[in-house]
Image 1 (cartoon, rainbow, N blue to C red):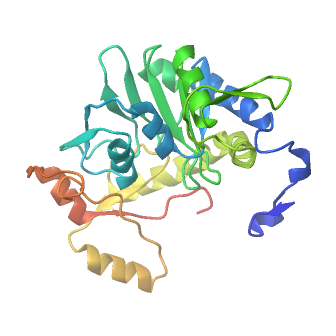
Image 2: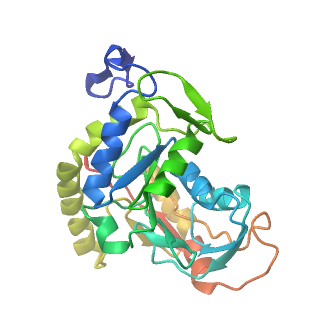
Amino acid sequence: MINLFNINNYTIDTSKLTGLHDSIVDRFEKRIAEFTGAKYACGFNSATNAIFMALLNKDTTVEVPSILPPVVCNAIKTSGNNISFRDDIDWVGDSYILHDFGDYKIIDSAQKIIKNQFLIEANPQDLMIFSFYPTKPIGSFDGGIIVSNDKEKINFFKMMVMNGCVFDEKSWKRKVIRPGFKMYLNAIQAYIANKNFDKLNKKYQALEEIRERYNSEFNIKNCSFHLYRLNVNDRQEFIKKAKESKIEIGIHYESLHNKQIYSNTKKLLPKSEKESETTISIPFHENL
């Protein structure tokens, strides 16, 4: 039994799981593929590692928004690629094209998941990445997934995340194909994500009501189901006042184009630089 911090006295009866590779993983992968309109899916222990694997050894330059979680840039660099930055501040809370190879593209949708999204935003050969980080629309003890209609790519990922091995369907006998990684989505992650997926419609209904109230009060149009961001003139003072009122404030995100670890090229991105100094995120969850 695993007690989840006494959250509603909720427990996972791990005796019902056959191991880290229980069939719940396959069932959950299929549910997400069907929900998003894709044919195939491969789970990962994090969306960051899904990005890493999708870009592994591509030896290319990936152009990304400067306002971005640094883990994305880390995955780009450690997978053997270079980074350039663009002045895009509008993507936050939505999906964006991480890289276009010409014959297919990678779509980072770690902050958004809706029904038939793959059909709407992607081509059959594309890769679309979702996240199950605890604060994301479908939260878990972290996790991620790649969906696609390209069976060959998905089968490659399934082999690589399982230490580069393929298993006999009827036994633990395995064949090592190539050096791989231990990046698979485990059964506990899949179990929690699957339970939260059951609640997604109800969660979105609650978030939509909260978001519309915010939009009305602040006179802006936010469409995200993940973050509610504002811009303030004096962020430090705002955070101080919020803390005094016991209101949790986040910053999503600081600009990265001026971080030397990611780029030695000086580039002026005025929108990103201003956003980096003024953006704040206010509480936005279904229990408000």
